[in-house]
Length: 316
Image 1 (cartoon, rainbow, N blue to C red):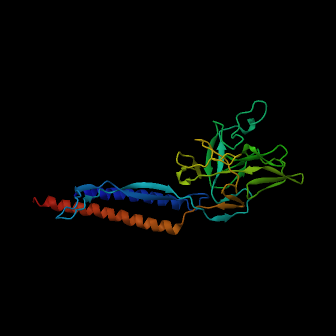
Image 2: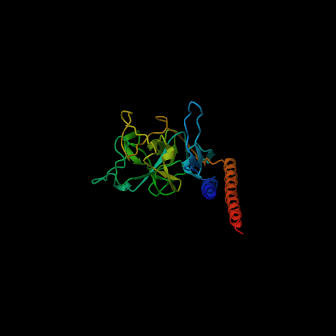
Image 3: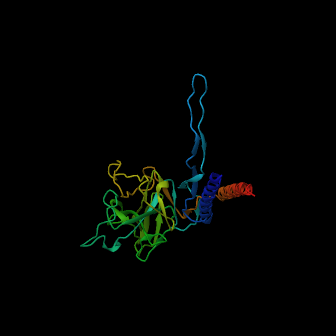
């Protein structure tokens, strides 16, 4: 009799977690770049009542008899489907159309990347992160800003990573990767679909750099850290590519930058944002099923309690 009560308790706990996930999805229905979650369940170990037996010459086989002991949380998945586009016409609002994520860095001094005693650059000539102080995070939220020094940053002040331009601001230097800076005397700027950031200075169009992205074969393995950001995990399946030979680069705990529209990566749409991929009608349906499942499990507990009460009353 107690098995049914504990099974009901496990069901209530599971559906409560499901409601937590649904509630978080609904709360972030209008959060740019948000990726919804999904709770899945697994049954617990079943208690055997009778084992199976093989058929004989005079009798057929018998199937095993087992009683389940409840349900447990299987996983909470991050669903990385494409969100809808919201047009804003703001030049620093960027949307990724396709696979990949923006790369944001912090923890290094941008003013000391050159000069007589430079610090280690954030990335080497192959676009592979090498600075041990570099802290990288990833996001699909493309609401960018310019800081006081003209660097492109996100709402948290983290630098948007990319390939920098050469000294003449005429070409992209793929051997130089790091934050992208728009000069203070730039008259205007624009961002192209391949991530190239152009600016006009004295009536001449020049290149400030090229926004880069990172690819993950298992984006669901990324870990949410809040503020629309993800961080790498041991199971994200980050794709490493040697920038010179286009061969797989086997390096743990490093980040490799890709140019947009290359190697199957996303293109960039300026003047738009990728909104949350939460579907309210789907979430309301999930909320109803979780609510009814929770109620059904409470009925299991109350019914089991009533039966136990009848057993106690037999002594009277």
